[in-house]
Image 1 (cartoon, chains in turn green, purple):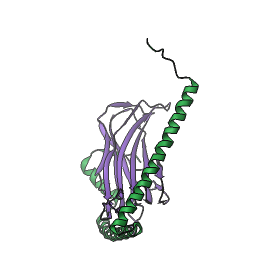
Image 2 (cartoon, each protein chain N blue to C red; image 1 turned 180 degrees about the vertical axis):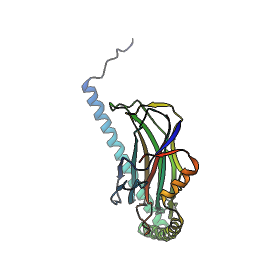
Image 3 (cartoon, one colour; image 1 turned 60 degrees about the horizontal axis):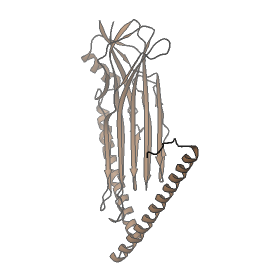
Length: 111
Length: 225
């Protein structure tokens, strides 16, 4: 015998919302457990390797600082190059007038 | 007879910015809009951010040029010109260890787009069209488990290098109507897992004539009378 289909009523929707909420909180709990397990596992492995997490973080921070300072130095050089290129350029209005004067006729400047 | 009309000063410049981050530091210098002199229709800004988790910064600009035809005309095409100038530097930190940890990643991109809107005397829009986004710049820094990575670039363009066009079209425009041509920039920067970005679209390099910023020097329409 076929089951009769009924539309979801308000109590059903409430139930769905609470189920969804429960599911989300279960997922969050599971994620926290996985993170805690990972952390524990990493600490254990690092201990076996004879290094601490703090040491590795320190190394990574120092490497990051080195990369940033190298970048600042290279950026300075790039800006100097850009500056010399800009000095050689004609003013923008003049460049536009030359470029468009060569390409289009007749022209009408509106503003 | 077909002719070309130029507009070199915007009627308006609109800017919106969005920044989303879970943690980290973020700093944006005042966004400066200028359409004070011909062809310097620019948005100048500087922005830096770094995050141990996720960070996103998006800046949108709309430069609107309005043409009011003196006679009844037919609009054949509309063009916008983009002249972005600025510097971008990115840095991504290596992961603490190779165990379950993600190295840093940072990316910056600039996209351009244009929109054409025809407005009649009642304020209705009988015709509108827009192009898709065109990516004109992308830089990324992706670290690995052994090295931090930093990258930098100067975004510099030449005249007529970046343009967007709506056309060919053939639309009747009466003398009481207006043609709005909108040039749009979208700048996006992301940093994740100990990475940082620094965007500078405002420094004048001490020259006094620099065009640092997101510039739209002009809009052009092709019409037939």
